[in-house]
Image: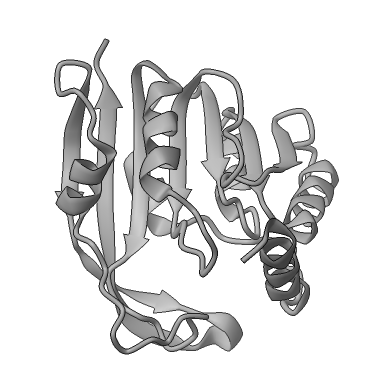
Length: 208
């Protein structure tokens, strides 16, 4: 499928959603980042912008990217309206074609799944290389299918965090896996619907 089709698909996904004035951050981000000194963060697939705004309120400088112009424009407007425009840079970016430039102390990729062509391992490898020494890459993937997910394929297989780490293929002399587990939680979806879901969490730190 073409980039044009991917853009149209994700623009349609976000346009169909009511824009939230206060999108919430992912719980796996808040539990991981709370206590870390603020620095430069990159949010891959920023979506509704809850993570980027949460980080910006805690003095992080955030570059937030998404393939959807709808998502990016909404986030930029929200950041400006909340006085966070100086800390959030929202940019439309297709990770299938290129990776954002810069060096970061935190890179997060929450549920970076798509029905279109995307070499996730290459994207996450590029993310690991974009970390400053001491920086962390947080990858949170679906470990189960929520009732409101766009992908309801009953045969879908969710790679484990260790599988994802192996696929990235990082040199352990430079990067270390700090966390690789699959906790469950009660999630809230569109319209307030709740369900128990599994998250696959991978946290990698660049050591040198």
